[in-house]
Length: 163
Image 1 (tube, one colour):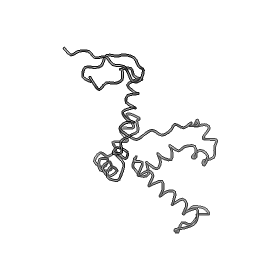
Image 2: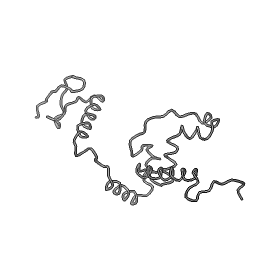
Image 3: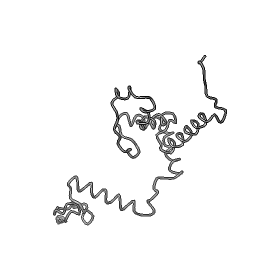
Image 4: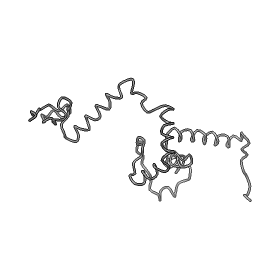
C-alpha cells in the first residue's frame, strides 16, 4: 500500500495529505481558494517563459482558427446561445443603463455608452467573432466614416428628401 505523504500548502500554510497520484507535485491543498491560487501561479510561471509570450497569436493561428470556423459554420452562435460564454477573454465590466434611461438619451450618447453593442454589430457585419476580424472591420468603418464626413472618395453628403 502506498504511504500517505503530508505537505504544507503554499497558499494557506495548512498541512494536508497529498493525493497519492500527485506525490512530489502537489503543492496546494484541495481547498477551492488554494487550488485557484495554484492554477494562477502555474499560469504566471508558464506565461513567464519567453517561448510562451506570444503563444496562439500571429497569422498562422488566425488562419488555423478561420479554417476551423469555415469547417464548423455557426458553431460560435450555437455555443454562445447554449452556454453564454465567449471564446475570448471577457471584457472589463461596464455599468449598463436601464433601457428606459437609454430611450430618453440622444442616440450618440446611448451608443457612446454601449461599446458591447458596437462590438456585437461589427461582429455581426463581419460574420466573425475573432478580435482580428472585428478590429479590421472597425478600422474600415472608421475610415469610411471619416471619408463621408470629409467628403472624400466620392462620398457626397445626402441632403434633401429621399425618393
